Length: 289
Image 1 (cartoon, helix red, strand yellow):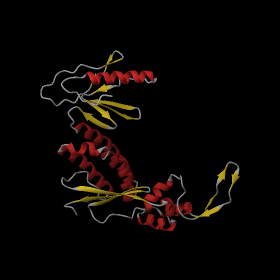
Image 2: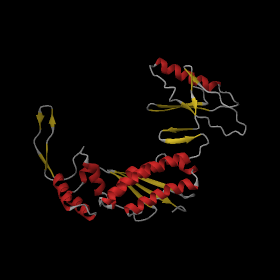
Image 3: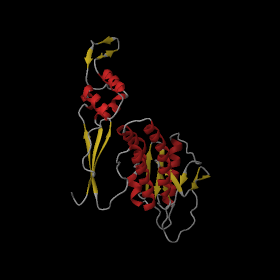
Image 4: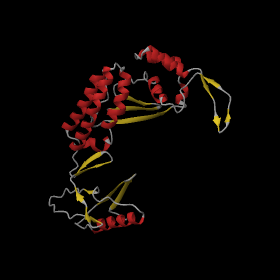
């Protein structure tokens, strides 16, 4: 491959990027033909109708760009496209991307309101927010947020503020402060799910207003469990387990998250992000402190 060309591959999404100098597109077009020939030799069919080309050209004197042809069919030149979930525009502005994000997360705010009306406690609402809303707001954020307009940033921050009012707790701001930096600690727990103490978990659940009957059911589910190991036709003896959560159980990540719920940061510049047994400590460092 020519040094000015790069192929970016992710699953079945393939992108060819070419740097054109002095209006010489020959190397770029040759690489496209090589890729087409490789696909043909490896029994892969290119869908020309869905294949798009975008030209990023910031030169003052711009000229019309002749289209590429793949197997005799022209490739459409577009002004914007969606790449790995991010909307790219030929002039590298991000209003289209932030508009798409806003539309998606506003739809999910509806479900957050429904959960609030169902009287779910703030810790569970916060967990829902971080999994379904914050994850969308922050998707690929390092690629696009730094060049967003002030208006786009305010639009995204209003969504965070709306979620705060629904949940009733403070949430991490999406806005950036120039001159600061962050440090992130990725915490690994040893045998996390095996360390849950059922009685302590029940106490924690009661404190966050989980109904007593549900708390009792969870405690009963976690205690005095008979476990056996079966390999083909051989079965081991029974062992009574009264701690931890069952491995492979869909309840385990949720129960561990609730078990960790009362572990919170005391300084507003430090945030704890918790998902099952994955925990991150994020600190915003200002003035070197």
